[in-house]
Amino acid sequence: MLYNNPRGIACSKCHGKTGKGGQKIAKYYDKYGNPKLLKGVSIINYTFEQLKASLNNNLRDKKNHRVRHKIMPLYYLTDKEIKAIYKYLQSVKDKEEEY
Image (cartoon, rainbow, N blue to C red; front, side, top):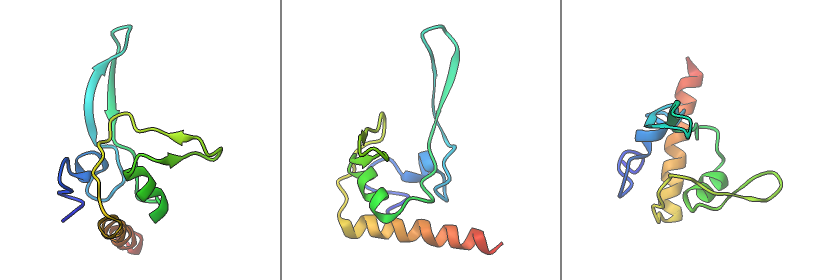
């Protein structure tokens, strides 16, 4: 339920039903007039800590620099809610790996 309705824009709208990303978020034009597509990224392989950091807009790169989201909204989810989303993503991932 939380993945599809987390008190705001559904995770699935950008990250797809299974968290693999690729969903079209917006079409825009760069400063030269070239059309560009903004697509959701894959979150299927995020660890719980990465997912939590990402949802709190506190994700860090390998050099420990903060990686800021450009368009992802803040959801103010509890740790329990984030854990539920994480478990959902893992269950979907596990089902796909069985096939």
